[in-house]
Image (cartoon, rainbow, N blue to C red):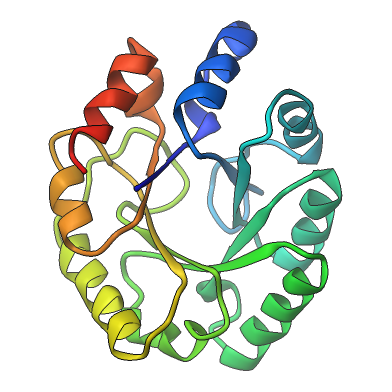
Length: 216
């Protein structure tokens, strides 16, 4: 299991303390990049990731919720991202998605595809042999602290089954409402990487991360 805390929920006044915990207890650090257009919220640019890169050797897991993922992929790649995941819904077109996946790979980064809760998982099946990460949204993207959508479990199972049937090796990741009460069922559905923001950062971070670990 990979735990990828979303720094959207981080307490930046406690940056040194919290980044030290992330460096010690988790594998990935998740960046929710929003442009105020693809989703209504606005977060941060590549300079924030640069600051994390100077303080951490964790896998920098960038999730682009933007109208122009190619532009942002290049900028965050230059800033030190290890993986770039973008939304299928930006293009709704397999060849355009394939082109961007190839460009991300050309920058020596992992490439991922993400889908919103309303998009049929079958829409991205033709891309799963090209990506390194498949990010399933279990809430509507754009805001933290939302409740997990239970129907996401069946969606995860479908992707996991497709992966197994076709012998693929991408990492199935889920983002939205993940906590210690649902993590066990999420992992049973075939998910391998958990994005958790509010749950990790509210309260005792180490204890919260350990609660997720016990669900494995």
